[in-house]
Image 1: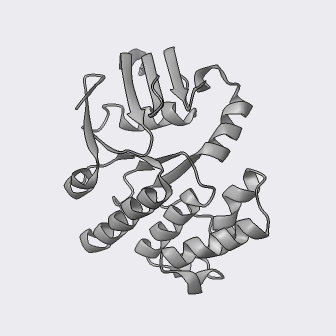
Image 2 (image 1 turned 135 degrees about the horizontal axis):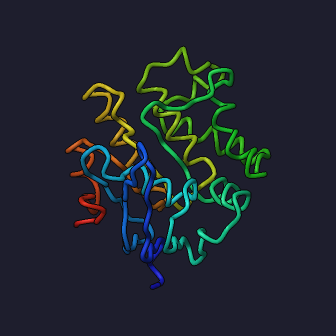
Length: 226
């Protein structure tokens, strides 16, 4: 693993049981992702895009092979250790925002800091600064259901970055937005990860999202094709 390599998948295999039959998603998959790069993952439904994100985050474990992130083999960590690893080093942005409706916008942003044990005055200041960067500084005390879809996704991006993760995983982040709003959110997402030097791996069906990425990979027959 070179100094600029953040992620290395080594001979990773993963299969699921579906209707009494085995569905093999990956077999001996090996690839690397560099620090600070943005990667768009393309592929038909069912090709394993979300499964790959789950393997990278430690939500799923490979049946065989290893997933290395930042010099550590997360495949060998316990479930508790993987949870703690995610809380400290990984941010998530989802298609349906996944904001907690009973928490205010600011409280949603502070949650990752609280879970990782880094909630203090500096953390709250950082959260407020992020709200300003996503042009929502006046909405900190609002609840998510009072925000538009685009505003909720901007909050979700800020929440994903508030703890300064090494890796940001995005699963169809503009898939629930209209074209114009999605384009604005996409521009913000790329701008923010560039500012923070975060590695972005994004599953998308959006041609525009792929065009903005530094690298485009397609999942086909359990292989990543550049």
